[in-house]
Length: 575
Image 1 (spheres, rainbow, N blue to C red):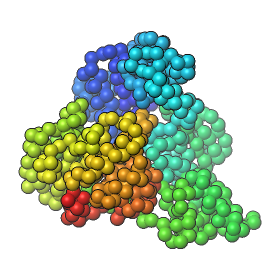
Image 2 (image 1 turned 120 degrees about the vertical axis):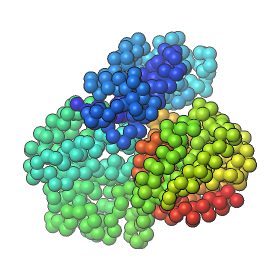
Image 3 (image 1 turned 120 degrees about the horizontal axis):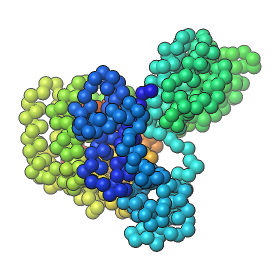
Image 4 (image 1 turned 60 degrees about the horizontal axis):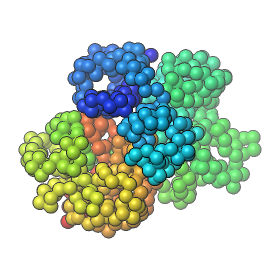
């Protein structure tokens, strides 16, 4: 049974968390975390790499010892060291360590003093007022912990779109190879490219439904068969992900796809139009009385209610129905229209490849340009560059640009926005850069007004180009910090700055709502990967999906421009 990269990364991350709770060597802990990041960012499955005889120890941050442990996971589905450490620290301590305001050190205190080992005992202690009595916690921390436990208990577990993709694509390939299958597609929020996914809804047209159902439930990752009928089945994978399969007739395929893609609010709006025309729309087709008028394709379903085809990413009832009726739907940006990546890292800070290696990988993707934006000096944990190191990097980039044909490396930096709103590099050096990607990496808990003021003050600097991952959120890990996004966008528009759609699957920041706000306000964005490895450049597809959900068109996205046009706008933003 294949083990997914996500599962390997989760085991390594869990081990790192537990080792930190135990107080193990920090370098050892960091090694496991870096290995987890490397595995999660790989474009190919580790299982297939090992089957092909690849040497895992050649991967960045993976030595022989870690390679052996990863091989153990792939072969057995377990990691003996993780099992050993878990037996010494029972419960959900690793999961608790991911809760904002906690972390491994605080979890260790809670475990040692109060015996807290899972979400239930954490909530109980918080409600009893026991946590506030511990040194270094206090009432405010206890209040935040209680709010977090209330939010997590009883809520639907949603996974990142990148994780869902890792499960969806193999099972889809598996189904397409079954006898009699013609069409097979994942619908639901996955098709709408939401940043998190609850489950997978798969639609299939097939001439042998019974055979397909048997084939589906025999998939090697199925742990539980929840239900199985003639045309529908539901299973749980060993990861806990629910997968629903429906076989639909070809004449109803478009109607079923439109129905099961959703969203529910979008479908209600479409059905309301149908009712006004004396029609009925369901998953079987469009009907006038008993007569089927359409259903084979989505396009003909929409046409029956006077709408053009609506792209799946737009189907949230955010005005797309009204726009369609007025022939005003956006021409959404596509991956092919992206000409370069404006935020990547090299091994000079916390990346894993040289500037030249990152540039060649970007050129291989058909890009015209790439911006190297290593961290500035304040981010010491990421080996941020001081003035001297950045000056040398600028010279290195100039030399490399002299050797590249048809491709340009832009000189940039991911500059920390300090607490007072100043930038973490001197003016002389900032002026030598083609662009700056400015970001908040600490003091996330400032009050809303102060955090907003901090960012706007940074935008006042003439060398400020792009606000990176504007809300600081980490999906399923860290909530966004409090800011007035409308005020920040208004300030960006006035000053000629733009905002980033960070395509890292754990970030996808700006979110879809904020992308739509940027478009409505006329604020330009860039879609960048924040790549730390050459393979991370592939994350661009997730950023484009997020931008499409926010109605963004090519003219809204700066890195769809040719280099000459882009440089003009970047100079205007920093003039």
